[in-house]
Length: 366
Image (cartoon, rainbow, N blue to C red; front, top):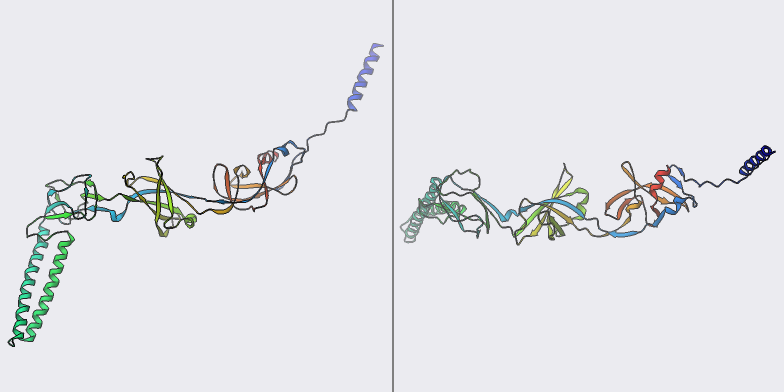
C-alpha cells in the first residue's frame, strides 16, 4: 500500500512540473550586416547612451619639432683673409664687442702686397693730377696742345679708378690703410659676444684655414621647424606661437612666425618655417631642440566623445541611431583628438544621433 502511495506522489509531482509555465528568455540583439537592433527589454539597452551631434568651435593646433639657431645676420665666423702669423689678440671668450672692434692682428706678405698696390696707386694719382693741372694751365695760356690735355685727363681718370679699387681692397679687410709692412688688424663685422675663440698668439694661419672665432648676437634667435603640407594652411607669417624646450619645461616662451619657405620638401612633404623668439637672458642656445605649437583660428566642426568612436583593424566607425532601438554602423574620418573629444572630418552630420556609450557590447553580440 505504501509503494502505491509513493508512486502516486511521484507521478503527481512530475505532472505538476510539466504543467509549470517556462520563464521567458531575454530577447537577443539582432545584427544584420551594419545594422543592429537592441530590444528595449534587453539589459544592454539600459547601458546604451546617445547624443545628438552638434557643431562646435574647435582649433586643431599644429605642433612641430624645431631646432634653435642663430639669426644669420647676427652670426659671424671669423677667419684670416691672408696666410700669416698672428702677433696679437684683442679679445677673450665671452667678451661683448661692437662692430669695428679689433679682434686680432696678423703679419702677412700677401697683405703687404695689397698695401703696396694702394700706395703705388695713390702716388700714381698724385702724379697724374699734377700733369693734368699743368696741361690745363698750358692750354689756358695758349701754349699747350689740346690733344695732350685730353690724354692727361684720361690718364688721371684711369689712375683714380685704380686708386679706388686699391682702396676698396683695403676696406674689405677693415684696414685703415697703414704704411707698408704694418700688420693687418682684423675687426668685428657685427655687434655680439665672442662665443668661440681659437686664437693663439704666434700661430701661423693659412688663408684657407677654418674660422678661428665666432661672434653671435643672441638676444633674438630663430627656431627652424617643419610643418606638414596638410597643416600649412593654418600657419601665417606674423602668427603668435608658443615654444617649449626640454631644458626649461616650466617656462612659457612665445615667438612669431618670421618666414614660411616657398618650397615643399618632397621626401617629408613638409615646409620649413622660421619662428623668431626674444632671448634677452640667452637661455635659448643654438642647437637646442624645441617644440612649437602653432595656434590656429577656431572653426566650426563636428566633435564627438571619444567613447563613441569604435575601432576595427585600421578603420574607425560610430553607431548612428536610426530607430527607437536600431543603430547603423558608419565609417568616419577623424582629425585631432584630446582626452575627451575627437574631431570628425567626414561621415557624420550635425543633427544625427549617435551611440556615445555601449558600443563595446555590440562587439560582444557579434
